[in-house]
Amino acid sequence: MSETTTINNRMTQSGDDTRHRIRAIVGASSGNLVEWFDFYVYSFCSIYFAHIFFPSGNTTTQLLQTAGVFAAGFLMRPIGGWLFGYIADKYGRKRSMLISVCMMCMGSLVIACLPGYAAIGTWAPALLLVARLFQGLSVGGEYGTSATYMSEVAVEGRKGFYASFQYVTLIGGQLLALLVVVILQQTMAESSLREWGWRIPFVVGAVLAIVALWLRRALNETSQKESRNLKEAGSLKGLWRNRKAFLMVLGFTAGGSLSFYTFTTYMQKYLVNTAGMHANVASTLMTVALFIFMLLQPLFGALSDKIGRRSSMLCFGALSALGTVPILTALQNVSSPWVAFILVVMALLAVSFYTSISGILKAEMFPPHVRALGVGLSYAVANALFGGSAEYVALSLKSIGSESAFFWYVSGMGALAFLVSLMLHRKGGGSKL
Image (cartoon, rainbow, N blue to C red; front, side, top):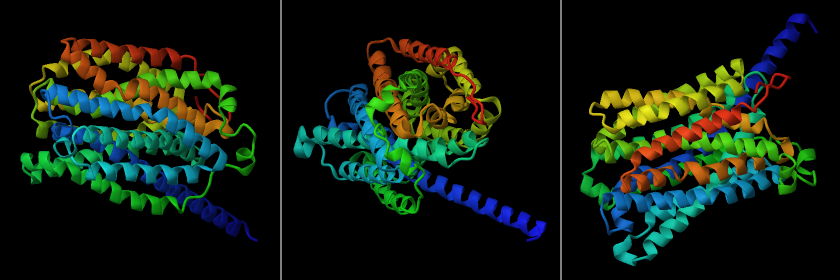
């Protein structure tokens, strides 16, 4: 065989390998997008259906009650992180991802078809809560497994870039949910939205899940049989041997998830309920801001491949600790949508240092036989305690006249993320922490 033929064969293999990895990223990401679309639809539509399930009280009280159900969904995430982490480490990443997207689809369909308080009384909010708990279980398992899968399918030296697409699709799901709401706002009367139109996005999410299932069925398994057969694979005992990594992930995820949910899901309500902005204007503003946020993820992921995960996390922690209070204070009294847009994008730039490397950073901290469990459970616990409660804490403090205390709370958790990130160290072998 000539040297030219050998080189051509290597180039073909390299091209096939790249295409395979891209297909794997798309397949894993598709389910991730659907999961987060279904989950975020609840938050964005709650303005329109709060009165249906919680008819008594003023607007803030109704939003507080729906935020409570939203937060309750996060309480199921640790169970989902444990359950699906066990399945992924013991029986394979692919199987875990297929089950999780099916569960999210079912929860979304239940909410789409659920009668209101006027029809079935207290069963309405009770069943809404059950559906959200079901979805929370699914999302709790989705993050850890998809983060693990994407980190294992990526190549050394570009892991940050490839793994950043997890948050591209996560944000994409949130963006798509918001975009659907904006389209409905522009094409339907508000009375129709409040009566039945809010159900449409939940139906859309269920339909999208069918496509995700089809794509995920074609994925190759990334875990090794030897790893799955280990006695401690997917076990809490195996995770206990990596408890330092687990606690560190808890620490910086607490600050990262709180900042993320503050400037994404809660921000729309904040602009409407605090700044007095019209709901349509706030939705449009957040749609554009989230689109920019989504495009930033691969750039910041590639940057982490150059400067290291530790440096990226230190940047996030410092910017979150120092910039949160000034930005939220300025947004509190903002009058111009353009100024509000600039401030939100500035906050999302800081958050991008965390979101772009969130999955890969955690995956690199655990061995393969407990990787999905370690990533999923630690992330789920931190999100249940801090990320999922962001709206509830913010609205609770607002209801008692202490809204600014929430600003300092977010800032303080950013400082915690900075301190924990100082404990990260650089690794050799091409993996940059």
